[in-house]
Length: 137
Image (tube, rainbow, N blue to C red):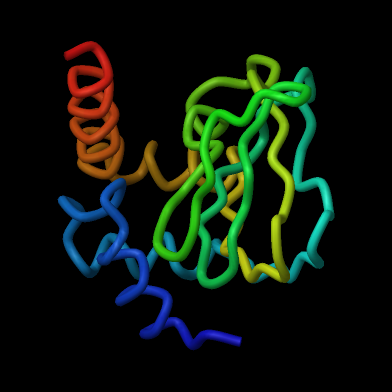
């Protein structure tokens, strides 16, 4: 189990949170929970309501639609980030490819923090916008 300080350092190393000050990351660290998943465990399925963001502490996950692989993600990568902003159904399934440890942040908890600290939402929007621009190029 990671301590709060270790969670803050981990969050700071994630692109999605890189622009957020450490004191604001502490609030996020406090609402995050660690989850272990075994190889082949489904983390969430396409069509389910988006209710959380996940960060890979260690291990590897696969984002896929049926048999089509969209991405393989590993340590310090995140998925489900749209789920903390929008409860729309998941656009893909995510499955652990090997034993994996995740940090989970629920939409409800994250939205409470964004209400209290709008700069967190601004930081997230900046990173998502940059990702979208990069994907379009």
